[in-house]
Length: 334
Ligand SMILES: NC(=O)c1ccc[n+]([C@@H]2O[C@H](COP(=O)([O-])OP(=O)(O)OC[C@H]3O[C@@H](n4cnc5c(N)ncnc54)[C@H](O)[C@@H]3O)[C@@H](O)[C@H]2O)c1
Image 1 (cartoon, protein in one colour):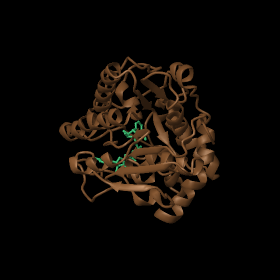
Image 2 (image 1 turned 180 degrees about the horizontal axis):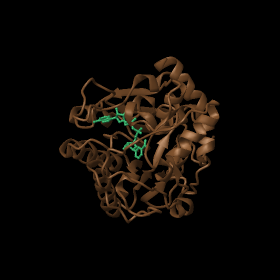
Image 3 (image 1 turned 135 degrees about the vertical axis):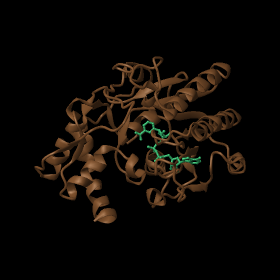
């Protein structure tokens, strides 16, 4: 599937965070559709270190890259020597996905260093290579701003959301000072789809509930889950957004969501339908402060400027994903 008329064959493409969920899907998009593209992945993969919340410090996993034929650099954004390896290349496109992606890490110093300080290095590399930069921002920049969340009206409520908000400010200043460069930030809403499994407990509720149901357990949801609505977006639409962003006429920040909020209860119900089960739902109290209760991307600018519009409604995304949810269950859990 080609989402633009850009021919990425013979182009040199950097994907930071390429061993993670979205980055690895991008890598396979280019490999499958532009076999002569030169793809370089930069990712620190995972160590055994955890944050105080018990989650791994990074989620990159080799299994996301089995079959990938491009180049791989195991490097940490926070390590200058590792970043220097990138100076050997001349990138045409940079997709910057690497980050602490866990919204429940509260160590502000490590988040700001990893997500924000290193963004200056990525911007410098973009300028040096005269590359097009597409970077991952987030709907977490909106906190509990009312729906539909609109670019320019952010109020982050956790360190992660703030780090992405800071990246947007830095990018804005940088592209205003470097008008020849094309720099696009994409505020992804709640992404789900293949290759998210190795994000463990930070993976989407689609795979987590899918696996609970496959285990014959009642899907477990927060109380009031029929009234907690999010804009869930399927990975293929996120890839579409990244590719279309390469054609943007001007730099900017855009929402990547469906524009159609759905409830967590809907996810459980659609999964039960797809899996042919009829289990009772089990409800428990939501332990989290600052939980986003309603997100809905305002997507008119993404449509007008990028030609982006989601192709997958929640039903379509889960249907496309279900065989992979089952495969992972068979191979990794059962
Ligand atoms: N998945 C979502 O729903 C979602 C929503 C909004 C924004 N985002 C953003 O999209 C991007 C990709 O997210 P994802 O869901 O693929 O998460 P992910 O955790 O699977 O991918 C991030 C990758 O970055 C790597 N990484 C982390 N720290 C690094 C470091 N210091 N040096 C080098 N590599 C490092 C990890 O190993 C991992 O492979 C992230 O920037 C994330 O914040 C994701």
